[in-house]
Length: 127
Image 1 (cartoon, rainbow, N blue to C red):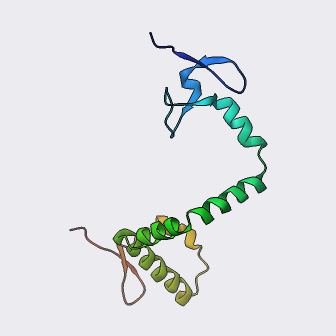
Image 2: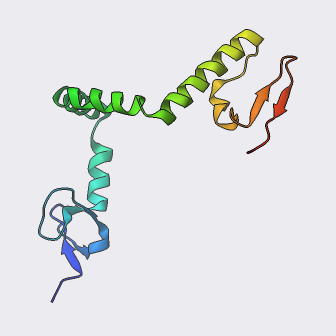
């Protein structure tokens, strides 16, 4: 018969299995040894400096893989199209002298709106 509870290795309390995160490493039940509460408490107590140092160590250990992954992502057609459109928008804002925030780009839809020669926005018909 399977047990629906598990004992936390840190607080030593018996808790339902839903109170444990799943483990990415092989384990007998597929769950971490400590409960979610203990995991959150540990993360809160760990200083930000240690997190940054751990991140740096991970980057140094996997630098080539990270760079290759970023390169592969940048070569995706949808990413290149977005970057091209962002560059166009930045140049447009600069040329027109607007002081708009580029963060509002998500609201701007470059494929639906086109600018005519006299500076008016035209709604492009959908095909």
